Length: 346
Ligand code: SAH
Image 1 (cartoon, protein in one colour):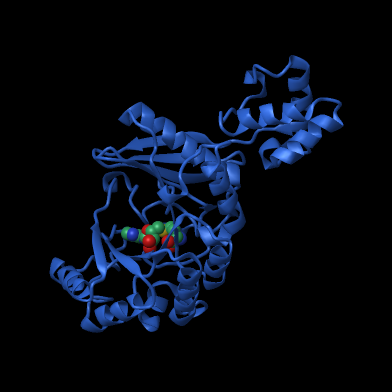
Image 2 (image 1 turned 60 degrees about the horizontal axis):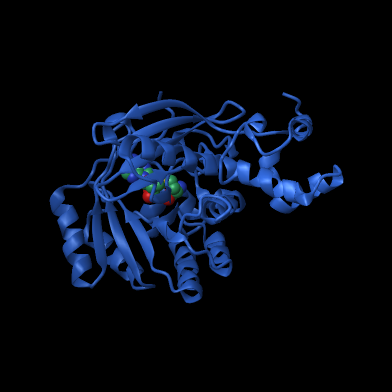
């Protein structure tokens, strides 16, 4: 591959139109190629049938279409599919298709590895190698939409940024990918069906509020007590709960949108009365709901899911304070495709 050739999907529509004008063609040609690249998700210039052969040659001389490849695929007995996705430079990330009765959700990665070091998450064992480009995130969605149609006879309905990486550490590319996913010139999906999950980077949460983003926000909270949160999510030292809380208040003031807190209850870590009390206080900051997530063990046994009694305790106390709480069962555990289990094992 000629390293000087540019990835054509890094160009905006305007830049693509200009390229054609500069090459003595019509700007409209740019629209046609843009459509092939995005809404039709084509990865081959030669398949652009309404573009002349000469023009395709010019494109090939100047550009490449970097794209992902589904490298491996594992299917769980519950219908979940885990994909090992090969990027153009050989790195592998994982994306998961999660079917439920009514919908199909794509769980996509935003980085190769992760720079955060959440002790309970398998991805944290992988060094962060690089951010994904917008097209690499977009391609994961397209690949899972295809699998959804093929194996479940329906289109992809929802997207969660809960795969590998911290999406807010790759904010610009994540936003660009969502723009394309929601644009009628891309996949035309509704932003209401997209959820971005973050460990909570206060400055970027405020920026998202300023940017008036339209997708849903989920925050991986896991503890509302600083010392405990820092012990399981060390970056909490840099972004303590006070700052996180302030940014969420700002988020709500600007967007009026409810935030979901993801929360795992572990044996001996956050299963006490004080833990529940602190969570209830944190929940008073803004309208929110709590998803109690089932813990997916990641080998070494340091963390154990709390007893059902401890979890019931959380539920009854939260409900007593009128806080909406859901219990989220894991999917695809038999193939290590569940939350926090993505670590390129295969
Ligand atoms: N970095 C982002 C998104 C990736 S993690 C974030 O932190 O939100 C997606 C979700 O999986 C988060 O809520 C995370 O806390 C949770 N998670 C991580 N490891 C887990 C595990 N072993 N079992 C269950 N959930 C886990």
